[in-house]
Length: 167
Image (cartoon, rainbow, N blue to C red; front, side, top):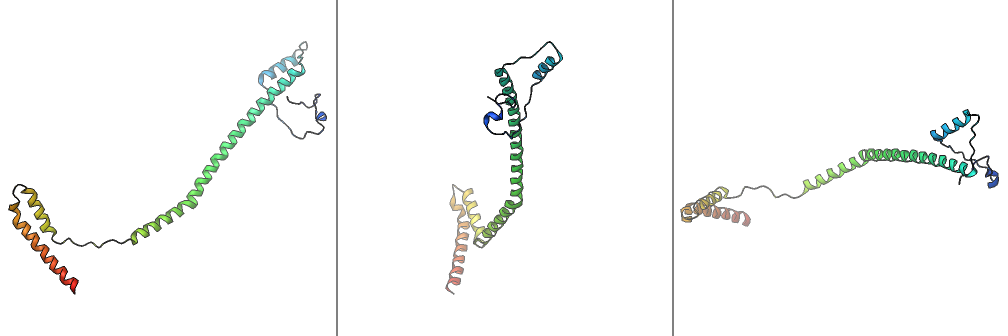
């Protein structure tokens, strides 16, 4: 139940002065009824205390719903602004930090050991031998000269490596 100032349930019965103020929204239908009552000298609107309280409570609820909707809209605007602020913070602070970390990672990758590129010894002889064997699958003896050339190259490379490793 809602107390109405000036009624029997005034602030005096509560024992303290009320300092809050409220807005009450009134429907267009009620205004029409009230205007019709004011314009017609013979028509008087009589309401019981319960009807009056019910009318005031309905107006209060309508106003409360409007205030709730405004608060929801305000919260949504604040949430959107907060999201925009976070995006700006990310662009201003976190993005440069992320770029710095990526640069450090790239430096670390550059410092990793990589074996030097060396020419594979006997690459030509090996390739010719493989092609010949693939082409003469039924007669591998036709590739004896290619196999002998690869063997000679391999022995020569072995001799060079033996000489350089013992010196």
